[in-house]
Length: 429
Image (cartoon, rainbow, N blue to C red; front, side, top):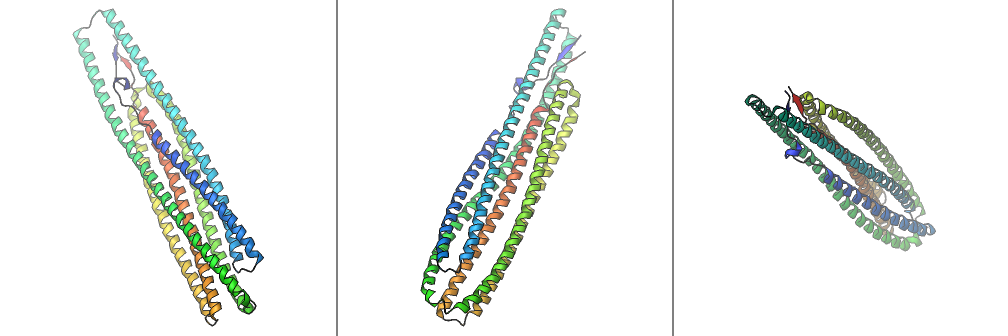
């Protein structure tokens, strides 16, 4: 005599699995806002380049001692504009790729849920058909068989309660992962706000720089009549400016080398993320095969629980590693800030040495030297502001990469938790 054994599943009031669609849509909106901000930055940089080109043309027609610095600033702004365009294209490509990945995961999730529902309904129909057939053949149920069925029903209910408890624990773990993703998103938003404030400060300083440059031009008109008298002094100043330019070029080369190291590091991190994505894809395929085996073999449930616990532990370790990486990058940024302060002090010392050599000049030369010091100070502040902006950009890129990795891990964990407890039916003698 065969007795059908039934375990209640989602059709008996099981919980609906949670989906990360809302977090994904929020991330896409943030990427769209970032892309719009980069477009505005490119437009502002283009206006700045046009203004400097016109101003440089006017200065080349006359005599201006800052033309070489303006040409260098113009070239640097063009390079910055090209980098912004490249970054905008990369962000568009990343957003499209993330959208496609999310759609693919949602489609796979719906297919798995539909397959599980069909399997449950089919097994339930077969069990009920066997039960009705058995009752029709026997014409009734004796006390021993009824007691046996009652015990089997209690055992099934107990197993169902244990499964529900395990599902609740996994849902709590998934909620913790989502909270971690939310924390990373808030940190990214704070960095973006700080970068916006820095850009506003940079615009204000640029306006002050333009006003100071206009004042310098007026001063140059006043002292143009005495230019012949100060040719020898101007030659000495040109030599000093050349030396300072060499030092500036050296510092610029150091900055470029440092940027190259950061780019290489970023590329390695992107390769690691791509490798992890490939590994997650392979694990997803393995999981589908394993899901098929679970529908026919209920004895492997314990092994799957242990494997899930090991994967949860690996996710915790990965989160700890990411936190350590963020702290290390914070220390590196502090070291870079110290190096910047040292270079600024060195520049101040060089400026002070130049001032001591020019104390013997008359009031006209002193006025001109004050204007030169003002220009150098403004240029130094502008370079420091650009360096801080580059550091913010690198930090934002690093956090975005980690945010994508955390979201991918959350989706993979959620898929495993919704598939490990698919109810099955088995006939026992």
